[in-house]
Structure formats: structure tokens, C-alpha cells
Length: 257
Image (cartoon, rainbow, N blue to C red):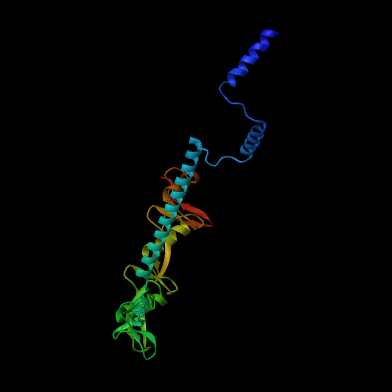
């Protein structure tokens, strides 16, 4: 026990060595200053390296934002200035230009009637609705009334234009329009099969069966003649052939030989 007390005393003596003793008043004042220091931090305390780095980063970020905002503002100002320097102005067309745009290069503007008209020697086409030559205007007049036709002559008796089919076209049976031979043939094929074609009979367009084909017994389709010959051989005998006529819905066949 005595050994331990001696060591404790030695340690205390070491810590207080060379330090003058303080009075009770000084000790109380020192105690109050320490409490005050614990409540209010010293503003002169040096800033740590971490705090310096954080505040520096914040300052750089703020500077970058300010520069970006300034650049965008300058860009907007530049765009606005450009728009104000080069305004977009829509050209207003004249009345004459509008007439030509709607009725062709041969159209003119009549200021007296405030309307469009065709220049001298030109007429409004019934189909194109443009100012065209007299010949073209007559052809368009026929085409609009009778598709597939063009002007043929002027009938002085009835004072009207005579229209006729264009080259390669023919009148339909009602003489209301002209169609190409290809169109007539296609119409026959649609109605009577691939073996059908268009021809005329007593001045009328009719469908008939072309070479190698014949009407079936009901005349509703063009079938191959060979297929009818096969029926004759089956029903009449070997070498029997189709005679080319039908009686009571039956093919007339030749006798075998």
C-alpha cells in the first residue's frame, strides 16, 4: 500500500514540476474561461483541410453555373438579334400571277370585271380547266361529253360539233363512249373466259370465241374445241368431232369414221 501511494505522489509531482501554484481566485477565473470556451467556439481556429476542399468545390460549382447561364443568355440575345435583322417577308402575288397559276400561262387578269380570262386565241378546256388552243378546246369538249372521242367536224346544219372515236377506239353499242379494242376484249374475257374476244356483228360489238375455242352448250363460256371433241368421242364414238352447233343443249357431233 505504501509503495502504490508513493508512485501516485511522484506522478503528480512530475506533472506539476516547475509550475507555480495558483491562488484560489485564479483557479476560479480559469474554470470560468474554460466553460466559456466550451460554449463559444474560437473564430480564429484554423480551418481543416476537408472543410477547405468542400468550400472550394462549392465555389467552383457556383462559378460554372454562372458562366453557363451567361452563355445561354448571350445565345438567346444573338438569336433574337438575328431574327430582328433578317425578317421573313411573304411575297404577295399579283392578280395576273394568280390567274396564270390557276388557268395556265395563257390566262390573263381582266381588271374591268375583276376576274381571270383567256388571252386572244385561247379557250378554257372542258377537262383541263386551262386556257388552251382552239383545237385542243374542241377535242376536250368532245372528250368530256363522250369519253374516248375527239373533234371530227362541225355540223353546220345543227350548228354543233361532231365527235368521233380516236384512232384505235370504237363506239360502244349505245354510242355514248369509245373504248380501245383492248378494253372490249378484256370485257369479253371477264364475261366469257380467256377464249373470248370482241368483234363486230351487224355494226354492233359482240363477244365470240377465238380460234381453238367454241361456245359451251349453254353459250355461257368459251371452252376449248378439243374438250368438246372429247365429249363427242365419249358419247358417239371414236373419231367423232364437234359439228359446231348445239341442239336442245346438246353438242351436235359427226359420225365416227
